[in-house]
Length: 154
Image (tube, rainbow, N blue to C red; front, side, top):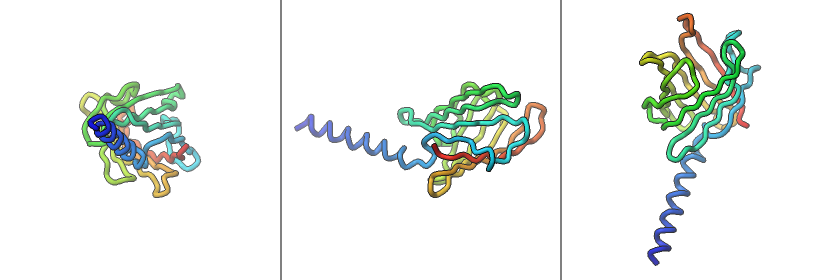
C-alpha cells in the first residue's frame, strides 16, 4: 500500500510539472521570419530560438549570426522570476533575467559588467503560432538600437 501511495504521488507531481511547461506558450522552437521582422542592416540575427524544460528551470538556446555574419550560439538556463542567471556564448551579456508578465508575455534584461545592454519584450500570439520580440539596447559603438523580430513556431 505504501509503495502505491508513493508511486501515485510521484506520478501526480510529474504530471503537474509537465502541465506547467506544456501550458507555457513560449516553450518550443521558434524560427525567425525576416520578412515580418524590422531589423537593421548588419544587425545580429537570432535565426532559431528554443525554449526547453531543464528540470524546474527553462533553457533558452539561441542560434544565429553576429553583426559580421559569423555563426553565433548562446544558452541561458533559469526561471522567469526576474532574477539574473548566467548566459553563455553571448559577447554582449554575462547575465540575463526574464520576468513573466502574463501567460503569453515575458520581459527580459541582459547585462554585462553590471550594465544593462539590452531590454526587451516577448509576446506570443493567442494561437501560439507567432512570437514577437521587441528590443532596445546599445550597440558596440554606444548607439541606441531598436529591433522587432518575428518568429514562427516550428
